[in-house]
Length: 104
Image (cartoon, rainbow, N blue to C red; front, side, top):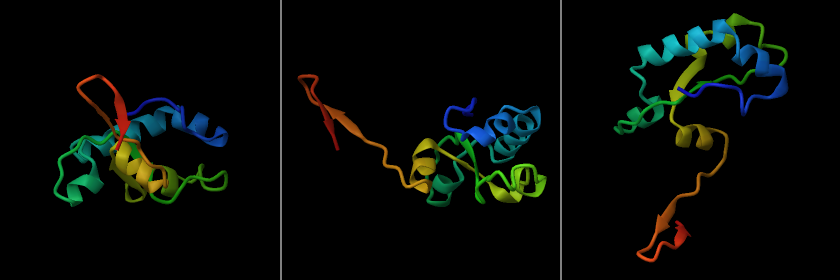
């Protein structure tokens, strides 16, 4: 599972490094058998890497365990599904026989 707070917004950094969150995140992932829930729903077996909050954390709700630590508000997703959830695109690359890199 992804560890650390590289992408966390400033108000959430302390929460994401807390023991309460780390235990919650790890137990949630274990119960989901470490598989991306979105991929699995499409019949694809893919490791989950990020425990994502369905209702995003805000400065107003981050202290509310019904939002921040509630399994009903979490999804285990792979990096690709997490990026798609946030509207980002993940570039895919191919390399030809000469070693040149191309974006697909």
